[in-house]
Image (cartoon, rainbow, N blue to C red; front, side, top):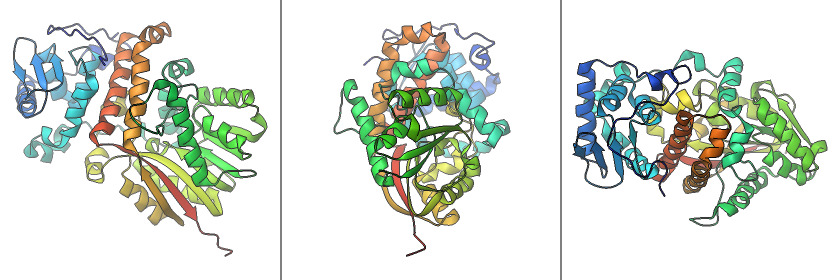
Length: 423
């Protein structure tokens, strides 16, 4: 399927970004002519070895054949990458300086070969050229509220345009591939039910949910007879989750608190958290896991769903500021499966009893979201989101899908158990 602009033409295009809202997209950060020239040489050398078909305005081409990537403004494209690395690559897409008829396919090639794109000599000097994490995005209690609001308080109506009727914003679990969009809600319920089964949620269970989303898991747990306390930092999500719980007839069993996980009190038979650890930040992972331990009663069970990266990529990722962090999930960092297990072992009395990976299911979930977002672009615009924002979200969904399709990303469900000291 063509994602955006199926008939790309190799001509430069002016950035459509309003300078006040998108300053670094409208006016690229300056890179010296020498740095731009060196970047162009490094980029073209890397592309020559890839199974891509890259066309530069002016007639130059690169690659060994494969998905098409068209660079409409090579000077700005190389200048942005030279000035800010992969942040510049994403901003160049937002500005319309490059495009691809099959964006996911092109990004999947780049993700698959990510380790080969930068020469070893430049990798060793990464600290000199890679953008550093901004201190202002630390996930302190105050910083976490700002970071979460940046993404999740955009607009409930926006998320409703591309999510399914359950409004579930995390990976589904499918029976097979490819799937139809009308089966996405059932696949989301399958995922939720697996987590609730892992947690042992049922009649009378005291359940703590860390990260409410739009309330579907809390509603489904309450329908089983559990009494749910759910925590969120998003005012938009809290309001809609409470409304949906009332409509489902379970408001008496669902409580949604505007509360940081570090502020939670009490003990619970079960804890469930779905794709929330990605927003915690490595600095606070020990606190996060100690909180799970403190809130879980002896004999209790915690079910977590987490997006993970390969462990060997964490050293570079922990200090580098990325495009996703700048524009989509500020303060976020993916753990590796090994890091999760290490923190459980070193900071809690919990045991990792089970871990299941299902990255291919996330790729399929993202495909369905991306196609729906693309089809409803006019409705996104009607909500007040400009062309640069729409390209940002198209790139984000495609970039994430490519990560799972290439195997650079995975998603796990964990069962953590706590021994009952009385036994």
